[in-house]
Each structure stands twice: as structure tokens, then as C-alpha cells.
Image 1: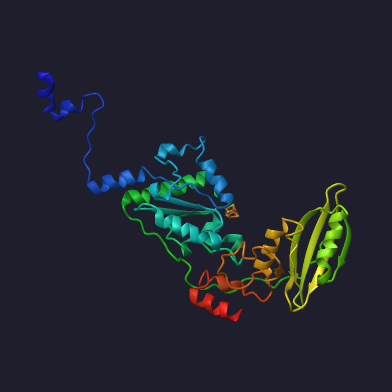
Image 2: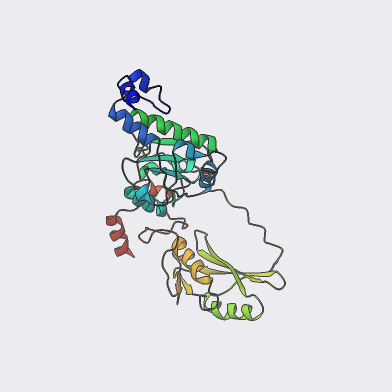
Length: 333
Ligand code: SF4
């Protein structure tokens, strides 16, 4: 022991001890190295890109070797990988999760949807890039990005963190883009399924009795309720199926200015949420519905997005209505 104590005074001998190591650095660099080597991503995904992200975290790519362990709680995570389409409804939740994450924290926008909204950029319900909601450090392009691209993005982020030079971008698109939508083409009439044995228009006052009769005749499955805005009027379309012989009956109701019809929720429980969708997107009301409120859009959303009068680009500024606009809209109802 005496000899070992003596030799420890000699740094050269110390380095010869098994497992001994020595390095000299600044504390700032040491902390940056620790941060970049222990990124803990929040485990959540939004759409198809999330599947690719899951593959990236699988054993084949082994992200554990980069010190990455996904966490189920934002309080334990310092990296958010936004993988998928950011809808307006989800944007609010993303912001809440981001705010709950421990700092310092970083964000990777993975895939064209998260970066810019991609194919859905002009859709009423999609945010044109997650950097409208939270600051983004790294953008990984692709639809979807491959696991290799994900890893490339992570390594780039590690480089940035290691150098202590993070500079996330926020609201990178500040100039409203010109309307790029082409005029709607006149849709060709869709071919009816050969299973449809009957297709007709009925009067809305006959709706409930008409449907009860069909149900008694074996059409016990409400396949869908939807609507079409024909400019001159809104038309409701219902499709009922007979599961015994695989036959279907379609019927339509042309609505006048009074956008109200009776609810079918007492006859088909599935009508509940389908009527809510039609209410949400077209503004058609259903008398007697037990809980007629929005289902796809946030409660305070202004207007009905599948109506032709709906202004498509209104989501750009701001990406959702302000409280003032909402209050104004409420008084106009
Ligand atoms: S970028 Fe492509 S793969 Fe990713 S969420 Fe959008 S559509 Fe899906």
C-alpha cells in the first residue's frame, strides 16, 4: 500500500492503473456533453411519421447507445420529436406538453407535415408547421423521414447542444403566402356501389318514419351520414346497410334555409357522433340530439369548414381564432 500511495503522487504512474483516465475541460463543455449524451425524448406521435420514429427507436437502430431513453412524462423529458401532422386541435396539447417539459429542452420537427403542413397545408384543420406553436431546433425532411434521417437529425442536434449554440426558430413563416389553391374542379359523379338497391330524395319531415321502416325491413346498420354543399342548397345523404344480404339503401334530403332535421340517435346509437360531425363541418342541426356539440374542431372554432362560404386561408393569421373574434362570432349566431 505504501508503494501505491507513493506512486499516486506521480500522475504518470496513476494513468497506468487499470480503468484510470484523465481529461481536462471547461465545466460548460462538460455540461453540454452531458446534456447531448442524455437526451430523453417524450414518447408521443401524431401520424404516419410516428411509425417511422418508432422504428428508429427499435432494437435495429438502438438509440440507447446515444443515451436516448423515451419517457412517458413530459416532466422527465427534454426532447420533443414532433412526428406527424399537427392539427389545430392537437397544437394546443403539444404546446401544453412542451411547457411541461423540463428545461433546457429541444424540439425536432420530423417530416414534411410537422415542418410545413405539407399536403395538408391548406386544410382548415392543420397548422402550417409546428414552429407556429413551439420553437424548433432541427427540421428533418421526408414523408416520412427514414430512421437514418431521424438519427441524422438527432446527431445534428447533439452537435448543436455540444457546441452550446442552440438557436431554435419560431414562426419561421411570417409572411402570409399567396393563395395557391387551384379552383375546385367540377367533380365527376361518383359511381354508386352495385350493392345500393335504392337511391332517392325524401322530405325531411318524413325522415324518422322512413328510417324506422327501413330498419324494420332489415337495414339495421347506419353506414354514414354526410352532407354536400351544392352552393344552392345543402343536401344530407344517409346510407343504411342490410348485413344479411349485403344490400344498401341511400337517401338524401335537400335542405332549405332552415338547416335543421330530426336526429336519428334514438334509432341508431351510431348516429350520435355522425350527426355531430355533420353539425361541426356543415352547421346542420339535429333536433333531439342528446349532445350536439363540435367533435372534430375545437369548441370555439369559428365557422363550418366544409361549407363553400368558409374562408380556407383564414387559419394562417392567426392559426386559430382569437377570443375577441370568438366572442363576436357568438353574438352573430
Ligand atoms: S410527412 Fe408524410 S408520413 Fe409524415 S405525417 Fe405527413 S403524410 Fe404522414
